[in-house]
Image 1 (cartoon, rainbow, N blue to C red):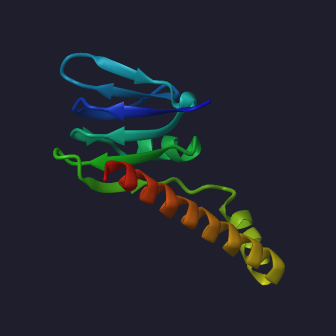
Image 2: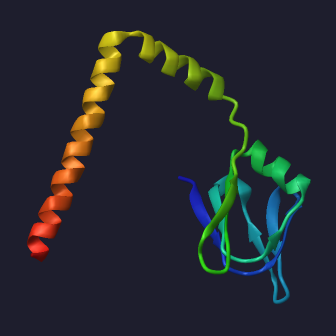
Length: 125
């Protein structure tokens, strides 16, 4: 199972052999790209196009947050299966019975969520 990597150190994110290296003032931290699903940066990180190409190859997203923890943006790689997903979504939309089934499940989940929020606040008084 792939994992999420959190970067709290500032530095340069570079490609080295077929993995990533965060070069900082203290030491270099190696990140095995094949084991990573997502990278979340909370510090000043510099990267280049070579790193983005490697992230794209292994379908790794990278999210950026500022010093205060506010979301800045993300790099999402181009997934090779995205065309099939869109075709499947259109096919589900065209079939009225499947569309109705999906909308019912969304409504049931929404009602379940509302009830759990109401129960929570009822306990709090």
